[in-house]
Image (tube, rainbow, N blue to C red; front, side, top):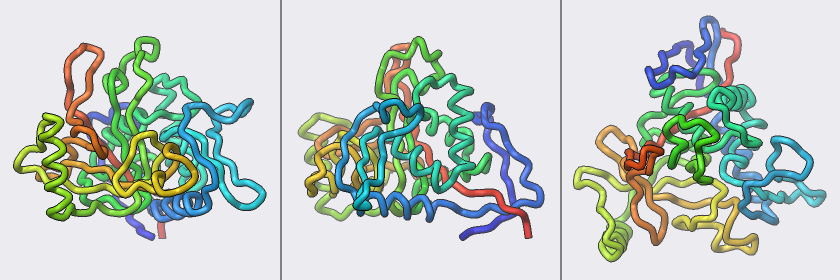
Length: 287
């Protein structure tokens, strides 16, 4: 548990983020609780599948159910999974994300991946509404939340103009970034050359990011490929991320695919991909 009495201002990019006055309040880190619940659900998983739909007749609820035998059925998408966990471990933090989704006029049942990314981008390294920004991804720890946005969703386009279904990705970190050994780096270079994909800049450092997420894409060391629960849905695995000298992401890569450095905006142009992260906490009375 981590307590601090210091608040830092949000960056200009966080103009939509309503800052709270933290005078006389302490911050109780809730990342550990978030990771613990994610790990427990994953350990007791009996059935999982990736879908954007939630429970029938239950508004704003992903289909995540603990069954009579104690096992879990998890049928949801990446943002439904993260929203479910946070609503139980960090309700103040989740409330801030829901409010921000309303500001962005997000009309989905639960906040989508791009909502998390834009909220986190506004934090920088500051704090706001139950979140501590983690700008340097080398400082990630278990229970932090990581997200990126894609397509028109990165550009604050009006909801009616957004045609692309993929808003990005959001996930729960399963620990700090890990270095790649020489063999893994060599395999990655061979793959990217074969696919005629751009290699990360020479100054970049490629690391693997362990996550617990809901996805249809294969991950490195993917638990979805080694169990009877299926090849999509909830699982644990690693995503490769290329970092600059400040620890900020230049691109991400999944097994068999090219490194992704950009996204296509509503203007038809390619824009830099932004990966942002934050740590949930709760305000408690100062001591």
